[in-house]
Image (cartoon, rainbow over all chains, first blue to last red; front, side, top):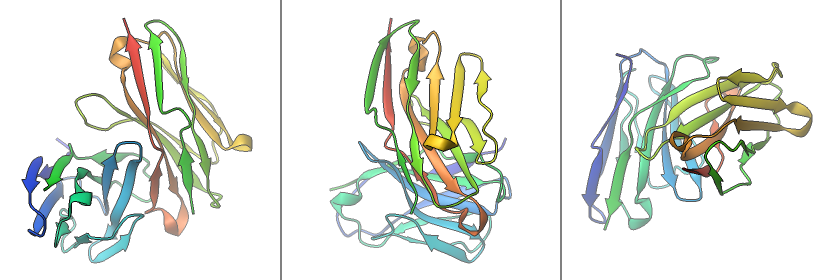
Length: 113
Length: 116
């Protein structure tokens, strides 16, 4: 089954404690991306990657890092989480340059105390 | 920079009413893609439709229809004879074409509540 898998789905952490949200897709997609969803703001793009070792900033990259060492995985790293990073995070992948549909993971709800 | 605006933050209707969700976009690209996604209370994002900038045909899928008008930069979504199961947050999104295809911008979302 084609899917994008995120872990953890839920996490409560404290300010400053580094954490990583993993994202893996089994569709051999080149493009992957991270979004955060906040009430009234919709989904905002954090980072995206068009292929292995190619990453670029989205609209809200501050406080986040990503890496793309292999095609299937695109982890989101919060080196020093702060309360304003409390949010619902989605990872997504896209089949090709002109394939419109984004395949989304189920979301990871992160709370930073 | 590209932008997507969904002017309606919340809409409340009674079952069987028709409802239209508005979406207006801004982009400098001549090639771009527009989408609608549904987010039911369970939280997942469900793809509904994609429309290319060079294809202004409207589309109907069951009770759903989409009206794409480049002249007004709008991509509106209509649900005919709404049902309680249509209650969700609906997002309109824009993706650039060409070398900027990685940038995807979502609107703020419209919360639709359909009452029995």
